[in-house]
Length: 256
Image 1 (cartoon, rainbow, N blue to C red):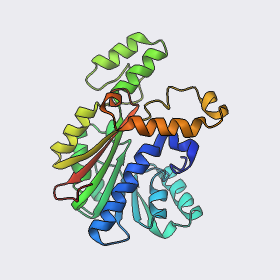
Image 2: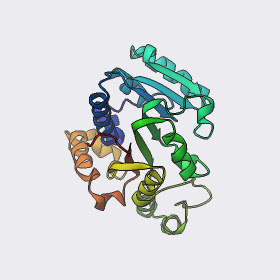
Image 3: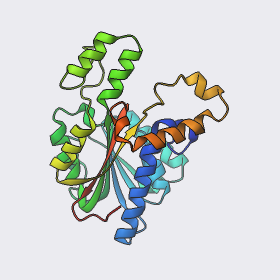
């Protein structure tokens, strides 16, 4: 996976990275500790874990794939942060078979909620890994983005099916088991006892713009990044984002 701090890759990750980095900085100030304990559930090869470790934090990555964890180990070594990144095999359902309950300042749950049988139970589970006043970074597939993508590809029946389906699926061949609206995700976070600190739309335009245009037009990447950042916080664009990011803060967490 590409590093979210690099410009081209940032088209997919910049909004989440900036929100996450700010949340980490605030927790550092609030706790008085320069190094936080961060849990990355489903963190794979370290797309976020390695950059977080570069900031000086200790990161535990839980992922069911041995191949992803091997790639994580190699990547962390190449980045010089192998001593701050630990990978363990597991999943969100059996999270506390492999990590400590209530042991983390920040928990990342990116691209996981789509694949758990009970999303509400999945959110409650990862929230249980937080210390008091901890922060949850939740990233999941957006319903509106999938509907828009199918429609623009000319698959109008599939777009309508995704819109009507309780799980936001466009058909039997859909690889994503669950998609969410911003209201659904915030309800899940609040239902787990957290306060919603921020909601952002992710990849509002990036997946709709032809790649050749971004790669060949001078300054296009930077201009699109600025556009994504400007639209991310506007509720009007949450409904068409490919992904939605919700920052959840445990009751009593410092104000942002």
